[in-house]
Length: 171
Image 1 (cartoon, rainbow, N blue to C red):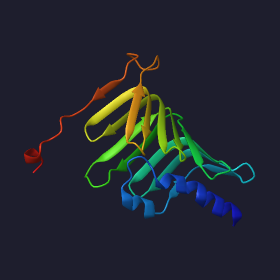
Image 2 (image 1 turned 60 degrees about the vertical axis):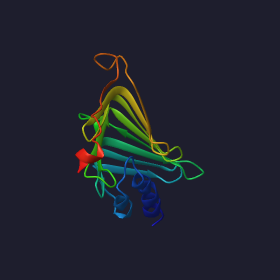
Image 3 (image 1 turned 120 degrees about the vertical axis):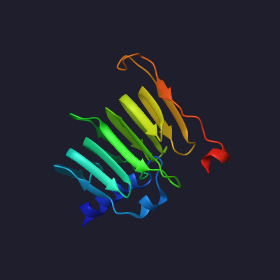
Image 4 (image 1 turned 180 degrees about the horizontal axis):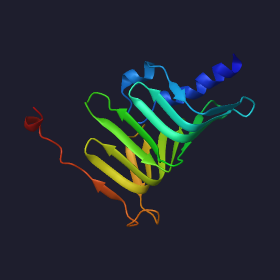
């Protein structure tokens, strides 16, 4: 029972993701993986092999996810790609729109409430797209940042930002 309780605490870190639809927080978390290892003493849980996490409208796909917890209870999760990039998708609160993204690696830190995508990263919100070697999102401040790099074909960040509709056009 102790391991099961620890696992549920670790999985709860995914209940406050990027642009969460509020209803997602009350939905059950489902994880499928080929293997799971729980090291209760070190507070490390590893899901390995075709990991698929779902909670409400949130879906995360990765080859491997490693979750650690520090002494204060803060959680850090790292999702690794395999033959496919780490991918996430979630409905935004209050609008009929999804946010999705991917990268070679994704990291979530519950203490700072940040998500970082590394290597061939992109985030798409509606029709707006940001691509770069690195993308970070701070959900407390709703602040994005991105940078290019040698892994990116042009070495630069690329963004496509659609014009916002006026109040009259929105109707």
